[in-house]
Image (cartoon, rainbow, N blue to C red; front, side, top):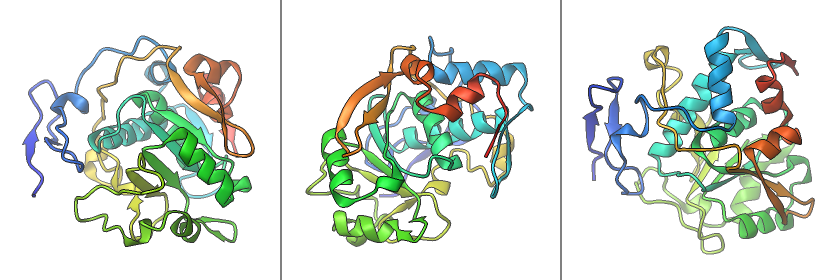
Length: 273
């Protein structure tokens, strides 16, 4: 069934807003590109506050790719990713598991995105990747989405996932039918951060709303955020064997420096990798 589109109301920016997401569930037009009050607390509102103060201040510098990120760049990317994931059906309380290097910009944007959208994020140590560990994470955390980089060193992570999740290479991601796994029934989306098309796997770069590579990116993406506080669950702590240790709130993540890049940006530090 073709996707039905309509234009947002007069209080929103003039972008197409889908009425039905890819899972067939209704999507409110105000979910993104609309004015909304700030959240009551948490990392998302803290990022918004420092961006409002000095938006062009440099926050991050990476050795390759887009090397320098200002505070407004971080906000724009995390807002756009949160809007796209929300439009695709993710909602507050859903769990996302990442298989990304600790210095990967995509991990850092996903951490801010999780804080914006009210997701719970389980960051698996990619250097400790094995079938047993990931299987425990998938069973105990019941993620709705898995985000990964196609390669880590010499490891073909896609091939590794194909062996662990046999339904994945047979999935037609363009048919409109959500992904389903017998072993991991909660899993609905598998997303990679690379550039190539991968069978059965969505590409992260197509999820952003607006698409950051188009002229739409010149306009601000003001996300309709759920009501969050510093006590809202955010980070699922994992033991080395993949079992769940505990769940940390926004305040815990900052006070314990569990996500050092997020903490550094909010402290107004300049972080160079």
